[in-house]
Image 1 (cartoon, rainbow, N blue to C red):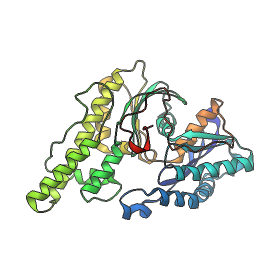
Image 2 (image 1 turned 45 degrees about the vertical axis):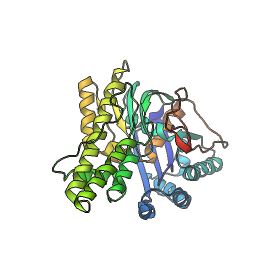
Image 3 (image 1 turned 90 degrees about the vertical axis):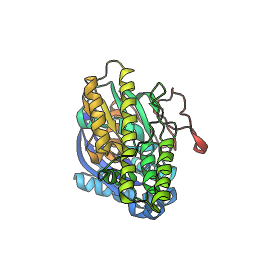
Image 4 (image 1 turned 30 degrees about the vertical axis):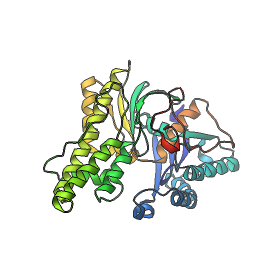
Length: 355
């Protein structure tokens, strides 16, 4: 059983180098080494810089996680590692470290889909039973998933262009706010005295797909109008734009969540995970959607919303209990859809179809 296992988890899919140790559902350690200072001057994550930092820090993160957990590597039952999707250089750093540790110790190796780590987090934090609906809303992804098992996911819809977290980051850059954009936009919106009405993309179309690229463009136009009128961007208007943007994202995600719930039978809960799930107004709106549907609303602690290795360790524990094992041929994957039967998302651009 997953509850009886001690798992070392490794995560390096974007710009956080992480390692954690789980024993059952108890998080013995959860180390996250952030790279915010390395990327701040560039206004976003630079893949080459991130990959180099992961390669330098992943072994340090593992040592610290084991030390904080008070165990040795030999005390673990398996090693779980994010094998994708993500920035390929970063993913490689943790995969190669995990393979080396597995080869040296003989511990089982389990490759984990990063999105599955987020999607299974409510199982770690709340022990929710299958099936449940998961809204995965982060900087790189936004999907509605019916979760039927540790490797059984059905995608009901997702973003056809920018993910919400990506949109928050871009809006922050447009308005001269610091990165990461989510906390900056939320803090600025809190001081708004009014709001600037912005569009709610795709609400006039059926289904659960989402779009945030046009909303970002609407922010650009609102900013440019304010600059043309005032000769600059007054703080009050910037706050109102942030408020309007945040409200639009909230309303779109709430309505699409209602549709996703209506499309599923037998759900035990409605859960949300991913970095954008830390947004307070969004959480409140999604909680209301769950209440209206008569479902428990599950949102992980803020520390487990952003990328972390505890969720990877838990996903690895569930996969291990289900008999899943990998060997040293485990490959890092830049793209890895959870629902392999669903058609690729539209708007994939030069980088290919979204996961």
